[in-house]
Length: 288
Image (cartoon, rainbow, N blue to C red; front, side, top):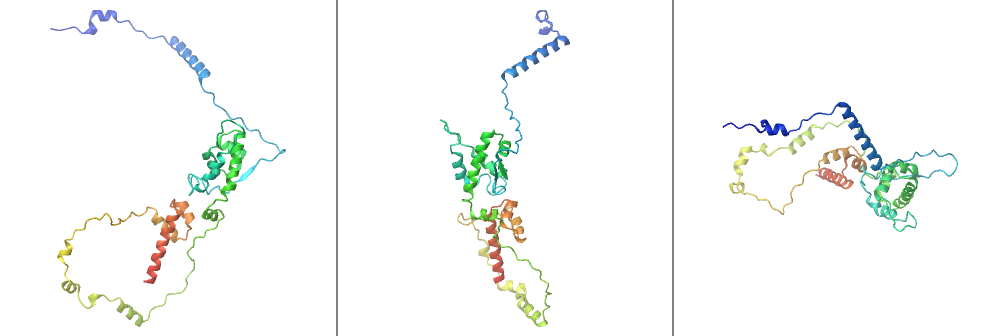
């Protein structure tokens, strides 16, 4: 028995309304009305972005703007040994940030430690205008950070470690390889010296062959069957540092520890340990 499709039934075709698209003129009018409503809603509810007013150029009269030379520029910051924060100065920076910077207010808000550290690592000369542009702050707030950085620099100079003082003063106490030009020609050995050298370097096979020595001292079969199990108390061999060959090559070229540290990223303590190991090995070879 064949059943008619539901889409072809008379009831369905009669109840379905006829659809028709709007003409282009009505669509354009509807689009314009929606656009106007959206623009009005954004104008009433969108947040207002604060635009910093342009700074007026100051004249030659009056007090000169304060300029602070930053002695720590290039020595602390994200690309230095002290990244991201200098350990020797964190107590100073945090203490200065918690001072009373806003006068007699009920709620005292400290300055940002991250912003103070950012100024110390980013600006070689610290001025109020430079801090305003760097941190996008107002004039009064930028003046607070300039004063805070000035206090930090004064106390950070007194708490610097000795190697940082030497690095900032341009002094490198690391010993460097002596450089000289040896123009002397090598002396040719005499026949007697060559004969003595050949005698000292003679091998045991001069008296017997290798087969005769193996026959006199055959390998022990019991020792070959011994199976050694790993001992958890036995120290495991550590993998070599990937930067060690590069560091040793730079040390051989006479480079200083501080410059190698900045170039490779390996700590100065590790570089000095590798350098001492190489020197100890060279002394042992000379003594042998």
